[in-house]
Amino acid sequence: MIPRVLTVAGSDSGGGAGIQADLKTMLAHGVHGMSVITAVTAQNSLGVQGAWELPVAAVRAQYRSVVDDIGVDAVKTGMLASAELVEAVAELISGTDAPAVVDPVGVSKHGDALLAASALESVRTKLLPAATVATPNLDEVAQLTGVHVESEDDLRRAAAAVLEYGPRWVLIKGGHLSGDAVDLLTDGSAEHWLRAPRHDNRHTHGTGCTLASAIASGLAKGLTVPEAVAAAKEYVTGAIAAGFALGGGIGPVDHGWRFRG
Image (cartoon, rainbow, N blue to C red; front, top):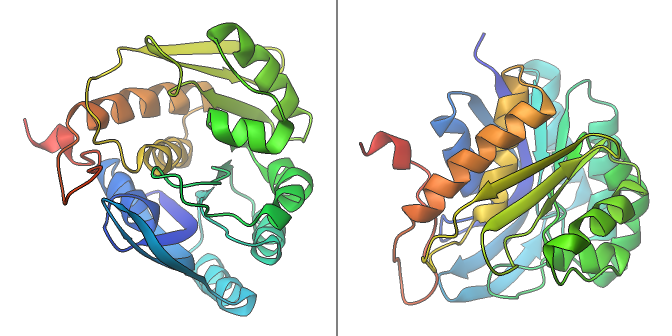
């Protein structure tokens, strides 16, 4: 059976991030992508013009509809918007026998808030403990833990702070640092440093969603966490290099770059 991956996230009307990026990434990885939409955004290359979260009952119904009939081999979470949705999704993935990749989305690429401040404690105490892999960027690390990463040397401290909330693994994404794009994957004992050249391309909308979905796809195909993360890092690096202009602002990464020869 083709591996099945479920994304629980918000919709990006511009197609560069969110549910749309997740499903494109899953298709590129040869898995069957399924979706639970948590919020609808009016969004383009310039930013987020509006966001409307769905009722908890609608999110639960979508999740149960998919998982109870089709089944799932990995789950990925993205924009969850509110404390109520965070707690509902945490409960759902905790009760599902599949690895969960948690991207604790706090703000958009343009700096627009995608998570209520009141939801941070629910992310810390409910969602992160349910994660097989958590994938915060440096802004999200600061939001969740108060640790501010200024250099590569701070990545270990950031990882330790996130691991205290209970995910099995954490991938601290160092993309906002200068120099090479360096990430740290650790479970508190084993360390995996992932390095890639930094591409001079501002069209990077959807990188976090894309990376987390690629990791979930790898886990669904039976890869270990380090294998899935390494493969996802290679994929997203190529997608960033091929990112393209769209609209008047920040364009998306190219989810289909491997098919363009």
